Amino acid sequence: MIKTERLQADIEALRAISDPCNGGVTRIGFTERYRQGVEYVKQRMQECGLTTYEDEIGNLYGVMEGQDSSAAKIISGSHLDTVRNAGAFDGIAGVVCALEAARVIKERGIKLKHTYEVLGFIEEEGTNFGQVLLGSRFISGDLTDADKDRFISKDKQPLREVLSNYMQGIETVPACRKNDNILAFLEVHDEQGPVLQETNTDIGIVQSIVALSQLSISITGFAGHAGTVPMNLRQDAGLAGCSLVSRMTSYVLRKYTNEATFTVGKFSLLPNSSNCIPNNCSFTIDLRSGTQAIVDNVLDYLQDMKKLVEQEYNVTIDVNIDSYKDEVVMDQGLQQLIAESCDKLGLSYRNINSGAGHDAMIMANLCKTAMIFIPCDRGITHHPLEKVEWEDMRKGTELLLETILRLDSQF
Picture 1: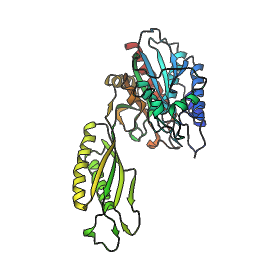
Picture 2: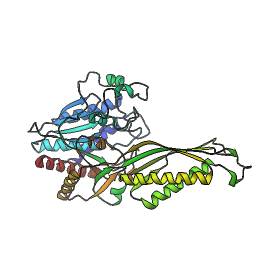
Picture 3: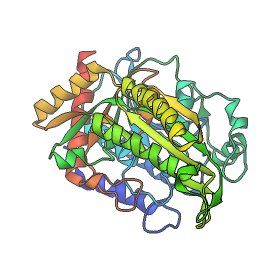
Picture 4: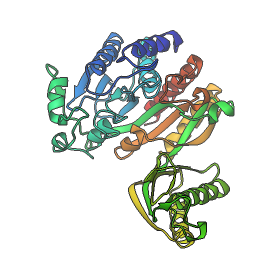
């Protein structure tokens, strides 16, 4: 039986393992505080009979050996690091749920055919080295030994040096599992959005992790006195920027209200003086959608609006695409298996896309991968007020367990 008190105890224990911050949780990868969190989880894993080890990059595993050593492995987990002053559930809930599933398998005396592994990824948030999904990217082989010298921490230390200190006295295994025999990876995560709560739905079955494009826009005009240059003769980079942002936002709202997000997170003007016409406007765009074609369409529309605004305001606009990532589609067979498990357990569910990145998007390069979302209060995340109800964690764990058992019996 899934025990909510154990789920709560683990979450609260990890909440308390934090660097000082403003009411939230700060546990950054490769730090002393992160090591304390890993040791806590490692101890809980060992208490329920799992064999523990860490790989060369700091990912933590708890392993329950299956009866058939030749059978592919089933893996579940998420990340153990946080952003600064975060909540207690983002990522951590997925590790705790995976661990509780292992406990219940042990308590019921179930003998799995497949080896089951609980996995705690390191540095998913990328706070220490500015490299998101770092732990899973080493597992997938996207990153290699050479990157240990290339990545520099916030404290100006190369990853190799940081690892030497962080892993001191700990035996490790290679991180890359590109050639390993893995049947499936399952990640439980709080939704980080309000949809499940607003629709009173127990479970979100993730169809895809969204396509993402991040851009930097720079608009060049001509400065002048705020009181002496007539409006029709200006080259106002600020007004041009506002116009471009307004046109793009209206387009996404009108055409893709529930299918895409368009965010301008930074916006600045030069010379930034109250009595001077701006000669430069720069801002960022974060564009996301579960459908690749929508991202491409919005980018095409941006090029059309760029030309129009340049002509209307007599300015020059440079558009730089800083990053572009395709959507990552979750395995349809696993989605169906999760849906069948929901039906058996009497859980309501809906298909949903993830607007945030997760380790699952990297693991999908290695094996069949799926994500299970559980409700998150008001969609608040990366914030001390992040909250997941214990009953929702129990439901997510129960669903994870049922899915693992179905995988084990069907393959």
